[in-house]
Image 1 (cartoon, rainbow, N blue to C red):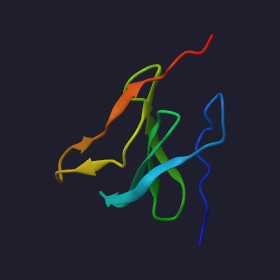
Image 2 (image 1 turned 45 degrees about the vertical axis):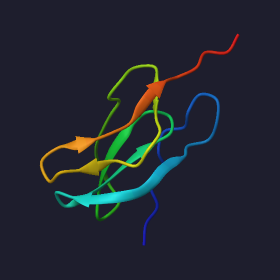
Image 3 (image 1 turned 90 degrees about the vertical axis):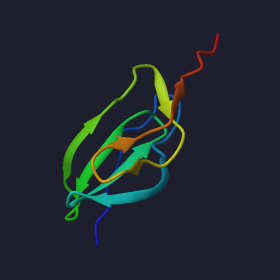
Image 4 (image 1 turned 180 degrees about the vertical axis):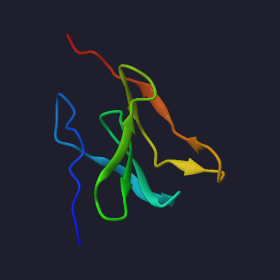
Length: 79
């Protein structure tokens, strides 16, 4: 077994969104801080991306077998 630590959000600890999606020989998951990750089945980061700057991801990723779909919303600025 292994564990993967996503990047923390500036205002809180790292939080995964929903269940990971197994596709293309990797586990794909979103984190609340706005990154979308692909991690090998051995636990190593393959890639990560931020689909929209200054936003958070609010739902687990889904796929049609070719593309990934994410739900994002603007990050609220306090102050």
